[in-house]
Image (tube, rainbow, N blue to C red; front, side, top):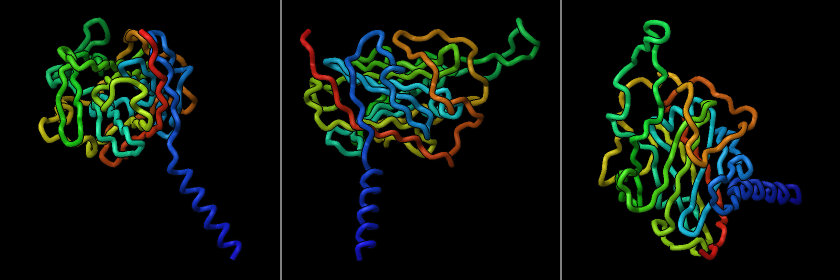
Length: 265
């Protein structure tokens, strides 16, 4: 009887541990904030991530040098979900990047300065992007060039072909006006597969009809965007071959976030 009781207690402890989210303490956002110094690392997906905030926005940064993950983000974007009730439902989400179809190269090109017929290393992340903001079942395409809601979005590859991702979402869009309004904030970073992603009832998703091959190669040199991350990734995060496949499960990283309190202006 005692042995059975101990086994039950052990199973309960294991299940409780499985359901516990990583706690992420959000530092104050600043211009030179370091992902390396504030990073959490998801070994399964090889993604290094952090959250920060100021008086008006919450920011998510992550980076990865995993080739397959970079290709998935190039085509399908990443999704940042919010649950302000301390659960894992994510009734608000931002999907970024979502590319305008005409921003992508129509096909391979030759570079006359190198070997005749060589394929140019196309920019995987052209600047003409939009985002999809979803509240419940209602999705809205956001033109970041003329956006007035205050989204902050950037994605690029650094000179070592590490993807650097950053988004900032105004508190007003997730039900508050300051950090103190969010005492039970859970967030998720999701890298979808072709069969996953937020439901859209009022708009189509241009990223689902992306032209061209996904194997055109990585750019050899891209400048870091302002505030971009640097520093080596943990071991085991090197790029591996592979592309998007419906058989690959979505990457889902849920976290419990403790925001930094407001400061006087």
